[in-house]
Image 1 (cartoon, rainbow, N blue to C red):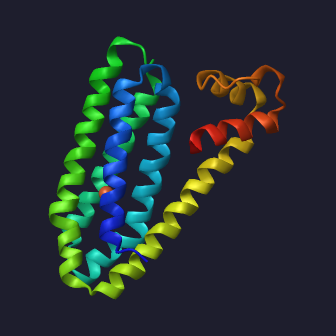
Image 2 (tube, helix red, strand yellow; image 1 turned 135 degrees about the vertical axis):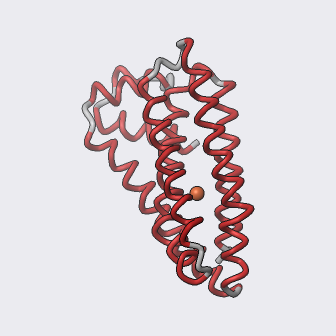
Length: 187
Ligand SMILES: [Fe+2]
């Protein structure tokens, strides 16, 4: 298994790429934002539950961990505000930039303070075990997010398929729409 620090930093880089796509691909903003939300919450929950407790206990960095959790909450709140806005509207760009800055600030602190403390406190084998725990929790959260599609109405799924420009959507049954939407998200 891969070292948890590499997994977390790779995830950060993937998130930054996704932010660039939100900026550039204006037409796909609604679905890209949903992807940001899924990634951000899965990453944050996995960190808070599987990694931060170890940093608090074994690296004795309770203050940094507490601050990290607060920053996760702040990022999620900014994202919820963003989800209420029209992606084509005037307000969106400025608010999106604010969200990206908040996440970048947190990522910098995590990579320069929290993760190095963890690396100093535990051995290589433990970092790999934590990598597994982080991945499992992250996957579990992402699966829950996907399962959410099943609880939605055909109309909601149809709207999403329309935003994604999925062809043949008008003739699809609810299950087919859910599947097509999930497939598109995985691409
Ligand atoms: Fe974090």
